[in-house]
Image (cartoon, rainbow, N blue to C red):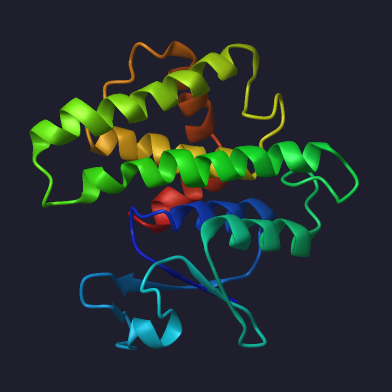
Amino acid sequence: MKLFYTKQSCSLVCRIIINEINFPCEFESVDLRSKKTETNMDFYSINPKGSVPVLQLDNGELLTENAIILQYLADTSNTISLLPAIGDFKRYRVLEWLNYTATEIHKSFGPLFNPTLSQEIKEQIFIPLLKNKFKYISKHLEHNKYLLGDQFTLPDAYMFVMITWASHFNLNLTDMTHLSRYFNELKQRKSIQKSLEEES
């Protein structure tokens, strides 16, 4: 199994889960500007969408999109603590948070990465929208250690990366005390520490 990744990108989420379940995996970095991998492969030949992550299975099959790769990893490893089994309604709560993180949080960062948008527009329009979503999450965490109560699950890995991005863009989230507590808790997790070390 091989993960095509880019440092400090959303592919870090998959690395965290790979380390969480202790799956053997190779990692090959991708330059998203040149669309070349570290072995000088044309990345478009691997993923015509041109984005990471991409998980290459041992049989040659390729999987893209964070939420799908995460589900595959949890199901293949039978790690029901990360994603409960079919038939357990908690599975859909995990997928609900995973979808929210992918579509509402991750995609909301898109304008902040856009160099053609002025900083003024970003600060007046897009940053307030994103901060409101983080406020919703912080309020939810008031009575929950993780997004799904006391159990670390797939969307927690995803949310860790999103909060890291917030710091990168200097979003002031210090008034969100429950979110800050949650982030500090996640930083102590061995799979997250290992993943950050591997990409440093």
